[in-house]
Image 1 (cartoon, rainbow, N blue to C red):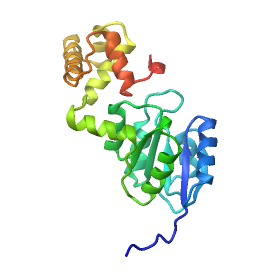
Image 2 (image 1 turned 30 degrees about the vertical axis):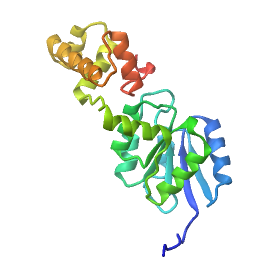
Image 3 (image 1 turned 180 degrees about the vertical axis):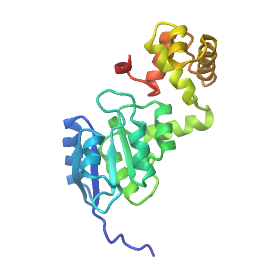
Length: 225
């Protein structure tokens, strides 16, 4: 016989830069059954860590985290810090590419939901995360299937660094000077990145196409340019 949860009241924190998301999630949680209480809402991770320097703790069961704050690239550092400490995190984002979803799961997110997936999925995901039970929403399921059947783009950290530098400069020579490597090395890494994208059915033969792929995968954002 299953033992009843002695504390069915889930306590969550929201980190998101949009007031409408805070209001919507709080309204949804207020009507949830079993109950969910939003104990705090923050517009960025700094505010959260100022209030809760130690996470997890008895006051917070689940963190609902918008991976992309203020239009920046995905905040993998914050997600890694939260998950590395053992905090249960539901990533709640408008980004829906397979690479971003799978990377978030690799980092340690309990689940990944796209904001368009709605109330029921978020409420169920919160309860599941609190109970350490896996929860798979529709877009996360698609990403997991694609990861199994098609493979995924796995750029090295050096390849990502060179891509970002190349998009921020005018030539491979300038990238080489910035990173203290030869232009031929820059070219080799870019060729490898293109080959990896082509291998998973997402060709990027031009600089603009490669930039689009990098933005899709959260390697950089328009504000980085």
